[in-house]
Image (cartoon, rainbow, N blue to C red; front, side, top):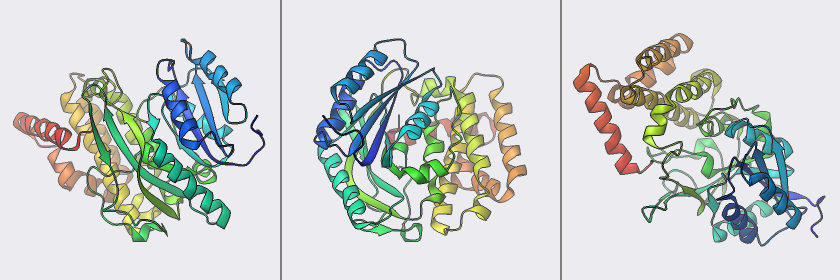
Length: 348
């Protein structure tokens, strides 16, 4: 039996809603990849599931006490489940793994070796970054997203040392493993019953991360392409109101040019926020909701009132202009450019 009081290097939080069909692969990948190590923990957050998820979570805890814990809560959505795992976490680091995704064994072993080394040497690293892979299982294809061209490797670094991120190199939830105390201090504003909260998770804590480390390993395997998945285009159009909600929260998190001191971090965050505004612009054009254009107009107006410098960068940069072309012809051009980018970067 594993000592439940043993020091934990990293906590893996697994938000799980009706995940009975997928969660075994996810949990097994972490257990096997870590060699069933006593210094990791897995917190399965059952988010009010109505299938066999609660029973399965309890079974995993019973099989691996001291490593696996089951947390049961009323349904609150993905963000609330992430926060529940963070609240319960005992690890120095915290990483979210969605229940239908999994981790690569070799890459996980590398990650744990590096994190243990930080602990042994007393080296404080606020953010550990690794690669992720889009696994399009139904197509039998996969696309790896790495940061070799943007981030230093094999050493601790700061934001002043990062390079330029390509459009396909955003730091997403899949690539991030935060130091737990840093993540808690961010007081993440993750709303209940809302999709796309991973954007807040990958944005709001960044200025609190002073030291970073990048491991060029393909750790996170992100299952994508399933009908009805939150990043499926038709689903995103249907949930456009939630996309606007998330973008507003990100807008109000910072006056980027006043609040974020490292220039390269500020530039990256401005690009990420502009991408979110552009998504709202594109999907407003794809939506048949008569309120969509009003939502978009109000969002841009509110951004201008909130921070005119952020507004100018977002609205009149290449992405802002390209996703807000006037006239019906402009709308068709915007949608065509979006679909072209989707094929190139394979993000849904």
